[in-house]
Image (cartoon, rainbow, N blue to C red; front, top):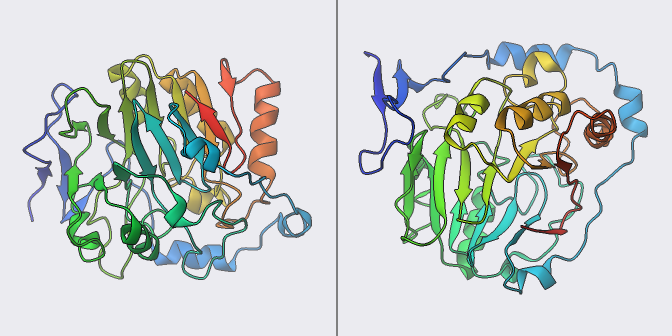
Length: 329
């Protein structure tokens, strides 16, 4: 199968000269480098002793959980971290929920509860699905949410094939990298942007569904939701198109061992580098403390990023949120 480019022909590109997402041998490609996500590497991880095993066992840290309902019932613009990569945003009176995961994932249980019952979430205009991995695109959570909420899904190329059966009669809008979704004039603008990541849910579906990140923009605020990504040059490319980013939400957990995690997630140093590449103002960490996905102790990501803050590596503002804690924007 010859190389070709895929994109949504109904949506504009925002990056000059961009041709769309490269498809090679039927699979989406990262822009700058590819990574090994083979089962052999996963087996190597299982057979490798964790040098932090004892430290991890002794680490009892968990994120605080507070009640987000007072903010959610209000009208002020802002955001609430609901654990892992799930956020509630209100921008210009329009509401968003990112990568909703209410329960455990596969055999992994939540370390902390989802801070509200799904039916207590406020009315939602949009659900943003960054990619198809189980801890970001959860069938049970999406089906539960659909019982009580009507919304439009904004997501990536080929995602409809996965989720349409879960969400009957729900509008699903797909975009490729550097494309702007067709949303009502006057409301927030939403753009689908790159990430250094991959896709797999089944034995033979490797990289058949695109992965990425989102930028949300009003006249008052520009917010970047980085989703799942390893560190790469796409952060600098994004900054060229969005030179004034108010809030950067970036992952800081699930980074050890590096030989398998580095192409998928950022550790705190890499997240701060991405934040500096983006030239953002407030840095909000995510993707830690909710699930035990990797070898580092659960509390290490927060301790590490606070150390970086103390050393002056974060030039503007770090905001480490409790689960359920609102941040006005």
